[in-house]
Image (cartoon, rainbow, N blue to C red; front, side, top):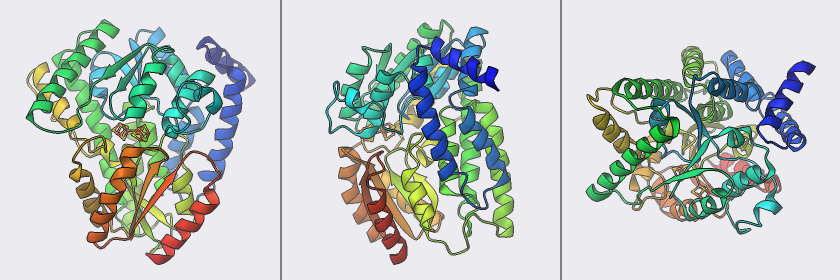
Amino acid sequence: MVQEEQDFNKMWSDLGMDVAAHNSLLDAVGQMYETVFLTQKNRPKSTTYLDNFANNLHSGRIREMVDARKDGKTKKIIGSFCLYVPEEIVIAAGGIEVGLCAGANWNTDEAERYIPRNTCPLIKGFMGFKLGRVCPYIESADLVVGENTCDGKKKAYEQFSKMKPMYVMDVPHVRNNNTKEIWRQEIYRFAEKMEDETGQKITLESLSRAIKLVNDKRRALQRLSMTRAADPAPISGLDSLLTIQAAFMDDSARLTQAINALAAECEERAATGVGVKPHGAKRVLYTGTPMAVPNWKLFNIIEKCGGVVVGEECCTGSRYYKDLVPEDGKTVEEMLDAIADRYLNIHCAIFTPNQDRRDDVISMAHRLHVNGVIDCSLQFCTLYDMESFSMEEAVQKAGIPYMHISTDYSTEDEGQLKTRVEAFLEMI
Ligand code: BJ8
């Protein structure tokens, strides 16, 4: 055990990390995990996979990725911050794609030397993690792929690129035939960049294999999500959220197997009326900004107050798995076009107009039999804050109770949030 710890310390140090600071981060997250996850009652047995995943997040999984690169099993580790970066292309070029969004405050004072104080916590988080050298995913990445989505990320990348090699994708903000063509060109450009980076050609075979691998993961997540329509819900919102968070970091094939095992257990639980909460617990649909590890604050509050989150319309939720890439492409170009079309259909608030997101929320609310919708934006996220007005109108018009929350990664507003969530659950 001691030997293992020393090995990991050496690995982190070889990656250029601040090992002492990183160890205190790990301690804090480990304690948070125990309080948030391990105190839940009646979890499906298969969630032991998630506990192991969380335990290995900064150690075993990083070792695996670093070793894979050393042994030539993969060419490069590619970090990304957004759902618009197609993992199928990274995998087809022989890379591993990992999510780098940060879900905790770290080194905030230092981050505020490069970006304004009133920046969303997700952006401040990844800047702080990089400046403090405490994230092994950022440090092990050979290339970081950014994207022109919100203004905050777009401008923060100009600073981030001084610390890490970066490539930025240009994502359109409206959908029409022109932007569809521009986005397809952007996808080809990205495929070429990946080939240059890994020195490996994307072939018909490698791309079909990658599409199937990622589709299988998305299909497993769809299967798990269907089981959450049952009352009582067979799995908590917290464990479902962690499953999606794992989808951005874990080995795809292994995780798909684990999600299918979890889904099978949840199907069984749903059929026999076994749940994480009693029958009739208030059912909440989450919509809003993404929740990166270890941002479990709101779900923890909702579920500790007796409610249960049964669905997530966000990038760490249905937006990640609801659409697949067709598997019948006959040429690399045809498959790249299909990837472009699939990714252009992600209903992020950077798009205008964005009626589709509201439609998704209403249809999920009906399918999952929710009692209320909680729409949450990270503080200073203008896009999601702006959309909350039309979201409220649409949800209430559909006869579903709605609440908007704006929060950050701190614990300061937990008491106030708890009071608001309790009142909402009481009312619905
Ligand atoms: S596809 S949601 S992952 S852009 S919360 S950093 S928007 S100020 S994360 Fe996003 Fe891609 Fe869209 Fe999804 Fe900016 Fe808002 Fe912060 Fe955000």
